[in-house]
Image 1 (cartoon, chains in turn cyan, red):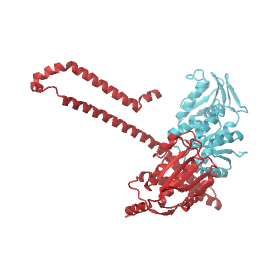
Image 2 (cartoon, rainbow over the protein chains, first blue to last red):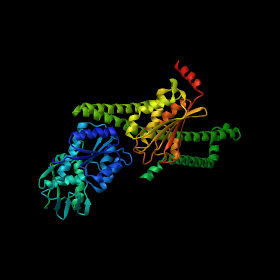
Image 3 (cartoon, rainbow over the protein chains, first blue to last red):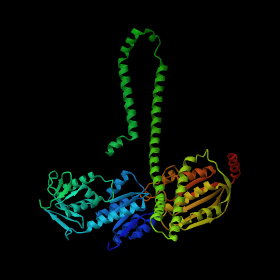
Image 4 (tube, each protein chain N blue to C red):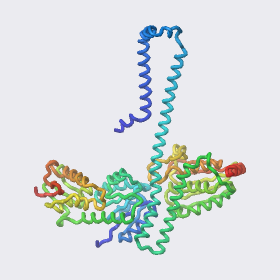
Length: 234
Length: 327
């Protein structure tokens, strides 16, 4: 990593914010702290960041709103949510609002640092162009990995961050079999709770976008008992 | 879906049950009147002695009374059911907000402890960390006190340990103890003692009241807003006003704000922590001191004034009462 990564910590509890800043700086990241939702969006407009650590209970504008706000213009900016709400439901709402990862308070420091590292690694991998190209064409369709835009069977649309990551992995290994475990490891990263079924759901969603007949896929093919394979030329 | 849900609202169910049972009653009466002659003939064959008397009004009245009692019973059940549902809702709100409030300082303490475990920390840094952890434990402690107190402070069994307290210097101590919080919020506190008084107070309980009021003022005010604490005499009471420049209150909120678990819900306050206990406990404590607690606000956004009025002339009585309980 040539460049230091810049992280925006959005946390209104000053003690927690200070502690996070201290630890992240020790790990070699550059850290900016915003203490409410509006300040966070202001920071996002003025500077560029590699990751946002976002608390949910914030004054002025809540964390969920902040995440949704960011997702309106940027579908792929990595967000790690940090919240005292720890039920499955809260987790699901957080991830739905656009978080890449969700960690409940109180958390373990090593786990937090690992997750930060994981998200940044995935983001870094995602940003590398395939064969020097940001755009990938197959059939009459294309995906622009830089913007997250894509053209499927029924016109242009925006891929979510995870969808883009899945497509990227499949395309970068086109013609080869990618196992579900590979996909989980690369796209979902550290989180072991995610089941392999999640992968199947994502593939089903992607087929709806890119296949004329999702039941008889041409591009994203299932390889029995192994995983999936991407065939661009069929 | 929400329309279907609305149909199952207790009010609709209640009205539905009433209508259904009145209709059933009417159908039954109708059927009975139509067939009453047959019944009479039938009954006369079996027990002719039953028809010796004339029509009995007493039995009719009894029947009506019974019906009224059943109606009243259903109504009472309904009212209590509703009350229970509201309490359950409040309770679950309370649990979620309390768990949030407990977890925040806990997360902070855990983070600093793990930082000291996993990172190399200089002596100054570790001293700073310890300071912050202590502040967090204090926060945790006062929250736990509030929770415990809310179940304990039933005015009937509250025992005050009263001692003469000079209000001005006592308030000064309380403010000094919260210095760090004021600095963090960049808040300027003005302590205006117009007339100082010596009152008989349970120092610990009253400190909780003041801490709650000042804490609220800080949480519900923007950074940099000032807080004025004014002590003055009014008739037989010594009044302490906490005047903040915070988000203010609507009339509806002013009415309900001292209720247990009640929290002001609007867009601005939804992300502010709180369990809805502080003001309830404070009011109970002030009430056991034979005082009163009031709130006034000109409206949302215009700040609010919380007033604690403590009696001056009943001190002697309070003292004997407190001693009596202590024995």
